[in-house]
Image (cartoon, rainbow, N blue to C red):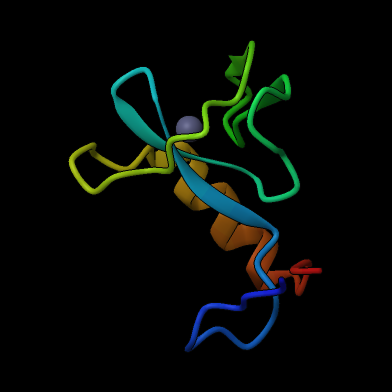
Length: 76
Ligand SMILES: [Zn+2]
């Protein structure tokens, strides 16, 4: 059950996640119910099973952080 989204060259390390009214990036490995942290270091007590939806503005800090990691080739 390994789905890699079309158009991506490398498996993604993060995914978008709706939290506190914004779309943040969280580690892809986190499963529903896990405690976690967004890329901008907001803690999440328990990751929701609901995936990010398009209605929230993207967290700029998460977006920049993610971009940096990709630029460094840190995608696996
Ligand atoms: Zn964020």
